[in-house]
Image 1 (cartoon, one colour):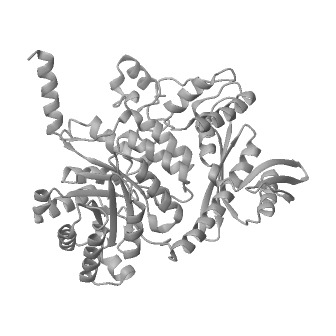
Image 2 (tube, rainbow, N blue to C red; image 1 turned 45 degrees about the horizontal axis):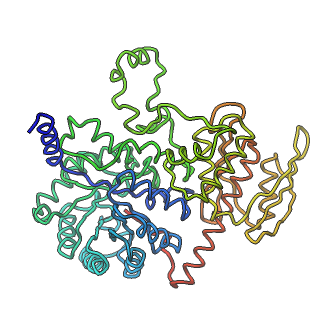
Amino acid sequence: MCADQNNASSAKSQADAKTRVVIFDTTLRDGEQSPGATLNFQEKLEIARQLEALGVDVIEAGFPITSVGDFESVRAIGQELQRATVAGLSRCVPRDIDRAGEALKGCAHPRIHVFCATSKIHREHKLKKAFEEIIRISVASVKQARQYTDNVEFSPEDGSRTELDYLVEITQAVVEAGATTVNIPDTVGYAVPEQYGHIFAYVREKLPMLDQKGIVLSAHCHNDLGLAVANSLAAVMNGARQVECTINGIGERAGNAALEEIVMALRTRSDYFSRFQTSINTRKIYPVSRMVSTMTGLHVQRNKAVVGENAFAHEAGIHQDGVLKYRQTYEIMDPRDVGLPENKLVLGKHSGRHAFRDRVIYLGYTLDDAAVDKAFEAFKALSDKKKDVYDEDIEAILDQQLQADRQLWELVRFQVSSGTGVIATATVVVRDSAGTERMEAATGDGPIDAIYSAMQKATEVSVQLEDYQTRAITSGKDAQGEVTVQVRHHDRKVKGRGLSTDVIEAAAKAYLAAINRIKTTDARKAAANTSNGNDPPGGAAQP
């Protein structure tokens, strides 16, 4: 055997000796619970495709009982993906479990994830049940889920605040009932690394059956104290072999553990985490991060680890000098390893369809020929308005296209009049899905306020504006302006996003996008109640 073959064989043996950490991505379920971050069917499907291409092992696609939309998304994702395991979340409620099982029918690799609260504070103040009753319900739920799939995960909600002996007892019970993965979540982000790691070590010490049966322990950490990634890594060091996380760390309240930070910590500090590896193709991290940010409207903070705009930027002179001489003086990661483009291809009005398609594929989108043609038309229209079209512009075009099923109302045209000492007035024309146009006029404190008042009259949807943000998504005086709004409709907060080289038009599109989300959600809720006669668990707590 030659030297190269010997080296290759040795490398393979070392890789086989490593312990694989399963990456469980819950961007489409827990991440989507971020206020206003609702994704439509096509957006969820596109993100799921890219998560599978990224190398994610388990994709939690949604909470099927909550709505027809969630049910359909879980079903479509489960039927399309062939490599990744697709999970549906369920409370320990029989109709929840049946609905999850129905959604995952025909899935290549299905998993049902059931959860029930176990901590003292949840037992006494939320469930008002004794621990023995919680065990009984949990065991029955795992057995019911096993009727649909042999891949069942159980989560004792608020596990990090559950008494250790109770945690051991319920873990043993659900494993004996058929659970193959037990997730111990830090549901409210209360744990600290040493304590959280000890929980996993303690459960494994008391239950040697877990290792004997190949039961996977999982960590699911929230970031309320900024410790989600640290806690997740502490769990891995103490026996967790699955980590639940989201792209960009999005999620309820302060978010979840960030997938990109966990994966790059294991990779970059392989000297410390030498036993562990993941299946993630790290060079796809940045494109997926951009896609999730674009589709959810949740911007990545500039100083965000791994994928933030400043993550590989050096302004201090001494840092710049060091990086130029030897990159590793101030860069512990190679930006190319996370898929950060070395340069951005600029397209323009003379760019052809082939160049445009190539750029769409590079950015991580999967479009059929008809969708590419439609996006190309929008690209050509934009290139007539501005000289250079950047990646961010193309992402915006694709995002707008994926929002097509939310366009119950379309902005046809608008006109505003405002100035110093003049009452701002606006006239808007919107078209509904049936093709009927409505024109309304209104006054306001300024041009934006006047447009929004006219839109409420035209659509007959009354909302309260809670947040308004605007930024240029590229540089230059011809840059597209992006406006993001958050509105309140009754007890629900909804985000809308609009883009245009005219910032007032972008503001109008953002507001209308929010109204479209409201109308679509209302329609889906009505359909859900009609189809199954159940009230979705809108306020149900989750891991």
